[in-house]
Image (tube, rainbow, N blue to C red):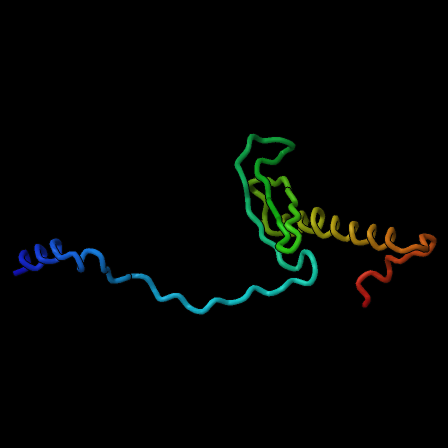
Length: 122
């Protein structure tokens, strides 16, 4: 009986073109949040290993979702979480705050005043 069933299914055109799905039914789509400032949402990845250069053999790639700006940070394989935090502050946060200060200073017509203190106070 099993062989007859398998033969029938293999010869049936409808059975061959219509298959039961084994995947879960997809849920509702969720809209991505609209970002209002750069660097509020980031993605990161590691690329390597590379030949050792400047005591580093991997690249830590950090990308801003809003602006698609990329920071490449050379790191070692043995880098721990505390060192990652330091490198993030040194290479991304410090650099972005310098850009914000430069834009704030250069965009104001009265360059004699220091407007860096007003940065972020709306």
